[in-house]
Image (cartoon, rainbow, N blue to C red):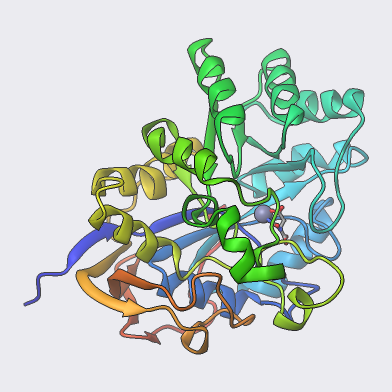
Amino acid sequence: MNDYLRIPGLIDIHVHLRDPGQTDKEDFNTGTAAALKGGITTIFDMPNNLEPVFSVEKLSEKSKIVSNKALCDYGFFFGSDGENLAEFEKAAGKTIGLKLYLSDTTGKYTVTDESQIYKIFKKWTKKKPVVVHAENEKVGLAIKIAYDCGNILHITHITGENELAQIMDAKKMGMKISSDATPHHLFLSLEDKERLGKYAEVKPPLVSKRNQAYLWNHISDIDCIASDHAPHMKKEKESEISYYGMPGLETMLPLLITAFHDGKLTFEDIIRMTSHNPSKIFNLKRDDSSYAEINSEEEYLIENETLFTKCKWSPFAGWYVKGKIKRVFLRGTRVYEDGKILVRPGFGKNIK
Ligand code: NCD
Ligand code: ZN
């Protein structure tokens, strides 16, 4: 017997596995392996592939390509540039929600025209969330439009008071609205920029210690933690051009457990933000047979060399974390133990 701590398998609602199109950065096999190693049993993959998921055809194509590579369970987001409204009805049934870019980031799929944003919100089903990447004034715009059109709204990767205060007001008004924060905004700040250089570049950008403290002080108001795992290769990150994003699947849970040891959040907070709320918001069945076993006292060093992600770097390399994921079970099957994946590619299933 062991005295490992059991935690429900994490549901990471914001992940970029780059497959198909940019499998030099990551693919569905390496990405879902990294997820399992991090105690994550379900990931939601974003639509900003090289050829974006704006049509049912692209969605089916992606589904076909990745299904025999997946090790953990997964769902897909549908995307929109405002020109694909005719696809929405069919796509809604095959996806977990719509992802909309209202601010610029990797892939340049930002929708800026307000009337077009209205059309998108109106047309998208009122039964599944619209997840928005919204920075600064775009947060208020997303809330206003979702309120007018009656959508379920989720604001991803919030970075401080601007988003959270507006979200809390909207909740009070009865809106179905939720948020997530990423480990990099919670554990890295502007102060890390000197050390990380271009590796610190991410959308939304890292924030000041003061903003970061706001997030920690309001952790009970934040609904989810999501990795926004966005791998780019080292040579890309070090180049003249900016490649925004950082990997995070393998480090999210250990960082959270370390924060638990530091008294910054409770175990209940971790479970609430990484499985209960993701299930509720995206209407998934509760699954008690998917879980991770953790030696919460074991301390270890995060090292680039041992990462499963294809990009082989982490902004947290060199950090000691306390909380080692020993074993992971998915739908009752032992899928990961002590650094090894125990199932074949294709074991992971599309949850829709
Ligand atoms: C993401 C990516 O690279 O796909 N980059 C990032 O900086 N977070 C896109 C995104 O989520 O904004
Ligand atoms: Zn993202």
